[in-house]
Structures are given as C-alpha cells and as structure tokens.
Image 1: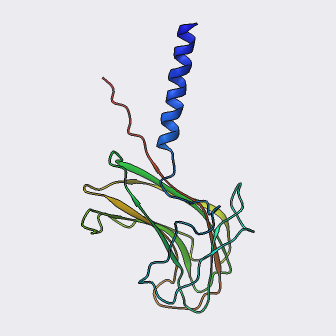
Image 2: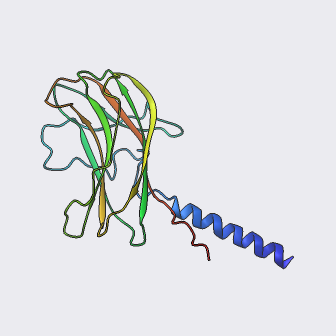
Length: 190
C-alpha cells in the first residue's frame, strides 16, 4: 500500500512540475479579460486602436485582440515580462487570423529580448502571416528561443506592418492564445 501511495505521489509531483514549466508567462494571452496587461507604447503615435473582440476567438473562450486597418496606419500592442532567473529557453506561440489584408500587409507576433541595461540582445524572433494571402483562417505560429547571455526581460509585440513603404490597408487581424512558456532542460544522464 505504501509503495503504491508513494508512486502516486511521485507521479503527482511530476505532473505538477510539468504544469509549472508549461505555465504561460504572459498575462491575459487569451484576451478573456479584454486588453488588460496589453498596452500601446506611448511613443507609438497615430496607430490603430486595439479592440477586444468577444465575437471571434480561436478555440474555447470568448475573446481575441482585433486590429482593424485604416489608411496606412499600423497596429502595435506589447506586454513586457521579466524572465525567470532559471529559464534558459522559451517557447512562444500564438494564433492569428486575417481578413481583407491589402497591398502585401502582414500581421506578426514578435519577441524582443533585453538585458539589465535595457539593450536589445539577440534577434527579434518574428512570426509573420503570409503577405500574398489577404484572408487566412486561424493559424498557429510558434518557435523556440534560446535565451542569450544576460537576458533579463522580453517584450511580446503583436502588430500589423506594411512591406517596405506605407500603403493603405483596410484588413483586419485577430490574435488569440498567445503564450510564452519555459522549455524544460533535458535531464542529465549519469
């Protein structure tokens, strides 16, 4: 009986550890709480107004982030997160859907990583919708990120962009279920 109980406790602890490692480091990445924890940076002027859209969502739930195009204005929202001290690698993933994109516009999920002096370290890690498709159904994007030496915090950026110069776009993009999770380090074999 004690052996069975101990096995159950160990299995339970294993599941708890796995759950903690896959916890979303972002807050409100599913937009179930509107736009709480997401912001348009003060330096971003004359951009699109982000909206919570309770009528369109990916998977369970009842919300997403919506950026509706107008003129040549871009949309831009961010969330900044301190990197856990023991994290070495992260996984970023999220879903995007577009409707009526024009003139090679695209939507993107991007991560930027900074050191303690607020200097960018490493590449920007963008995930971009196809520029040749004006309409795309919900599509999941994801990538693993090896954290550079000295990384202290990161920003997740959700945005719309034009290809090389400002051109009009009346299209809409929705973002949903944006996640940043730790990737567990492989156990060392002895």
